[in-house]
Image: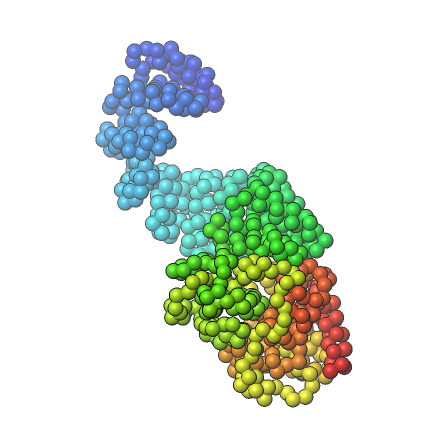
Length: 632
């Protein structure tokens, strides 16, 4: 070997000039026999310029010409490993170790390729042997740590990640995996520090941002979460998911603090879409943001329609478009799309199709047939949509059964219902000709805004229960049921529906009215105790067993005032006057404006005029209640 030529080539390679290095080596490679160092360097240069075929040829030549050289076998094994030719890589590593049993790097490489073949015990043995030979071999500590994490041994794993970082403190992946080990041990502060260290070392390591964001999300630290996404956007400005997630956390804070920053969230969503036009989730998020503004209905619909266009197989996109259409009363177009709430194309769909031995009803003639109607979402939905059950019976249905989650006979009071059972008693029912979701009935019956069956009552309270509860209520003064105290919810957006005890004081203080609590949840009732005693509604809910009892109480009242929840629907279905307190962005069923409801003729809607601000609503309701009291 020409030492001068080899050293010149090595200098080129070290300077990241592999093509030049290979040119310098060319005369040495043309000889019938080349030494192992020359072939190793030539193969490395070829690999660096993406000539994998040439790199393989040089290393195979090195093995052939130097069969006792452990290093060239190890290097060819590394190439095979990169090419995912794992059995061949394993064979090379094992031959390398036959030639040099103390070759720590070959033990390490063998451990890695065994792990890739899910031979976990053998892999661990090889990695531990490498560390016996080279306790400072950082990559072996790192690989062993990852292997131990696969075996759910995070405490052992974190020790090896620490060893790796002692040797290489600037190793971002090791910091990230140390964070994962701490997270598995629920050592959250240490996990956070490790993730942040990974980001400091490599500000473009997206997986570290994701893990840190998940940790902060779990802890509800939106301000810190926002800063993480802002940094990710700064360092990877063309990453559409970063802009989307930034928009999500900003938008979530608007649900609590008002809409002051909604423009920032909108800009983030639009940037995500600009970077990735097919980003369905970003388009849906933008559509839901636009839904916050009654004056931007057309933009909202255009956004949802575009989401369906770019992803026509997305049931979620079609369901969101359905919500937008129903929101403006476009029922003819909206109901069919509303069916996508249980479509298989939507993995996170809200509704699961039951496994029943008879067909789902698609609108076939019903004369002489039997049908099972299944409640699906909230109890308020059942109270709203059970109004369609008598129509089924009027079409000649011979047997109508209803299933809902409660052992409560209330729905059996609907005209035409033959059997009403709870979900756990489904097996006791006889076979039917068809089954149908209750909220599919408007679509199947061709319901429009003008043809909603809104004659009330269509639910009836049991008279014996009415007599009992009436005896426990005051005999004098108008009696008003009230629902307003917050209950535990899944998201801040749901929480925006609730008023709260202190905000309700001006209403509860209207003189000459006796308020009655209609909420049973302990968390909600606990808020009543924070009110001055003279303002606390009468609370009889300790003795209320089910909605049938609540219905009997409502039947004994003069008026119900409620936020948008199941009790409001129950009052409407019972034909009781109900005043509803609606948030700035109400559910689709209340449309976007107006004080009347097409669903409940005795309902009166009081809408927020400012996001998340109930003071104006409560003042208007209190004034209306005083007028109502004077008339009654």
